[in-house]
Amino acid sequence: MAFSLPMLIGARVSRIIVARRTWSLVSRALAALAGGYAFTTLLTLALALSLPALGVSRVQLLQALSMASFLVYAVVIMAVFHASSAARAWLWLGLGSLPLGIVVALGLSGAS
Image (cartoon, rainbow, N blue to C red; front, side, top):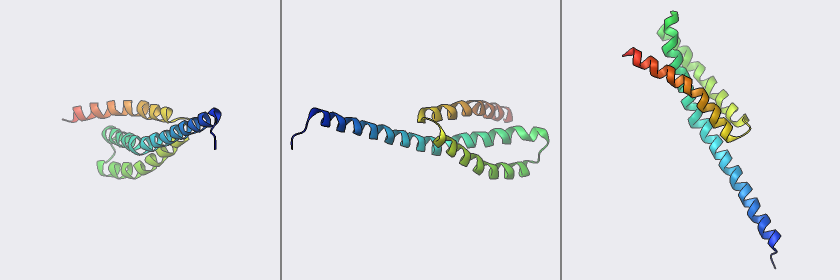
C-alpha cells in the first residue's frame, strides 16, 4: 500500500491534535487538584486569620471553615474544567491566590 503525502500529513496533524488535547487535559487535572487545593488552603487560612477580629470563636470558626473548604474545593475543580482553556484556568487560580497569599503572609507575620 502506497502512502501519499496528504495521508502522512493528515496522520501527523491528527497526532498533534491528540497530543495537545491530552496535555490540556493533564494541565487542567493538575490545576484542579494541586491549584485548587492551594487556592482552597489559602482561602481557609485567610479567613481563619481575618474572622477572629469580628469576634467569632476560634473553635466554631475552624469547624465551619473546615467543612466549607470541601465545598470550595469542589467548586474550584468544576470551575477549572469549565474554563475555556487550561491556561485561563491557571490564570484565574493564580490571580485568585495572589491576594489570598498576601493576606496570609501579612496575617502570619503579624501573629508572631
